[in-house]
Length: 74
Length: 252
Image (cartoon, rainbow over all chains, first blue to last red; front, side, top):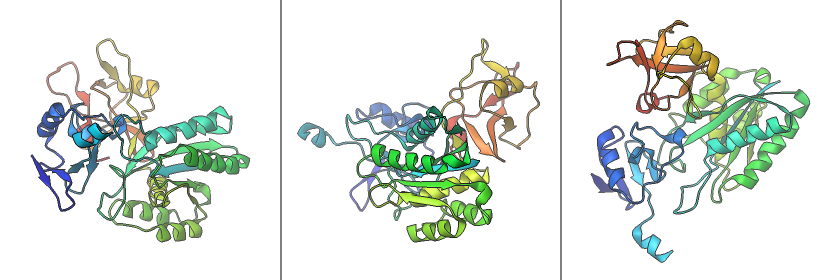
């Protein structure tokens, strides 16, 4: 479901139209945070595609959620 | 006087526990301040998608926000100052905000502006190119923090709004209907929507045609109008049409 790119970023491997998979991943993710509704593109409210921590790329998106390590040291 | 106010690159990635206002919200706040001061009447904000590319330092989606305002000509300088000061004060730390203000009636080569704008959806453009064009067309372009790279997207946003054929209107369309259906006439009289069109073939629906209302439909900018897109209805024989979903209008 995820791959690591050359910058060490976590990239969604399914592209920009895998609606069910993106919803499934968001439902499993404790860091999910809805972006502004104007930036939503998925019909399922809880979807990585609607998350404030996703950064779109040309083919998919990078997950920029804060890591558990960052949270514990904050 | 009719003007276009466009901003870009005012936000940064949301951090845990910290709320960051989106560029659309800031655009709406500038519009509200113009109206509160009695300086003009503002139209709804539109969101314009620009190129997503590794060479562009966007935050998460690279979209610009723009709105039109109808103002008294002598308020143009006040509004330019208000918008600029607002971006300095309210943009997120680490962002690169840009402001563009266009007076459409004074743009003698509108095709140049629209070409720049549509190129920004497909090609990496530079600040120098934005400033060169702004100078040639007499367009206000200013930086309000960081690298100021947001001027590129701000001018693109203004050009796309100027074209009348790009972007989605900010905010959900809100309706009240007992059976969750309304006629086109009712939709147009109760919301910003000016026309309802079939997404399949672009046919404009008649006033009395009835539409089943889905979750949070959006209006898009087409031929200078706020257009609600609909598709053939499935499963409800009392309606021929239903509103398009977010995934269907994401390309606009």
